[in-house]
Image (spheres, rainbow, N blue to C red):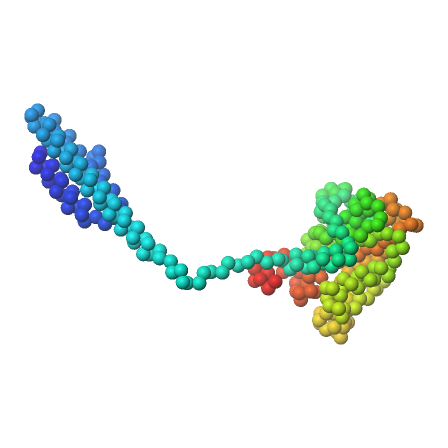
Length: 339
């Protein structure tokens, strides 16, 4: 048995020197010193030895185990250091190589346009008002002189939640809410998302954005409306821009008008963008209807006001030369990078 133990030690030492991997070293440890290892199997045969030899063989076995464990520990350290050295060589970083410049986020063109419009109207003394996108029918229609049987409801295909609650079709309910809780003078703009059941194409979307304005005070006239919109148009499209009012009809304003601006592309000479007319329609406006003022508890004999509303998406497209409204909602990074 002494010879077997010496042979196991010699064989283990030689095998250990040939190992170059930590996984192989662990397999070797289990095979040699584990519960079913070679050294353990030999020691289980000590029961067949004479009693006087057992202490000697036991001592020798412990010395061999200690020597092997010490050698294993040393080899483990060597292999770990070699593995670390190899990793450091493979993962060397050349600090002189230029780094990758991370992409910086940019404002969406709708956000840029909204910020610009807010600055323009804030500069003219307007406040910003907001309201819920899920709205009561009474605020969205009836308060704006659009009763249940009014034909204007057919024009605005509405997303109804139930008979009395809907997704707002314009931001005009914000004007109603403001007039109900605040007495004149009132001077606000109302930006926000609105919803209509439109088929998606280059110029229509079931979700789009509006920005509306309202001024109510004593002695407000169409001249005031004209002046505000003229300043707005020149600030957005350039100082050479001209505005033109065309008679129109809206249930909530009287008189009403659609407002055109001279084409910023051809400077009014006529091109494909303006259908060779030299003008582009951008918004609707008019004097607040007396019935709307009465609904909100404002005496139309004392106060008057004007209101206007424009599609933020349309203004953005005109400003940046975008020919398809769908591009504003698709979040294509190639498109957004241009802004």
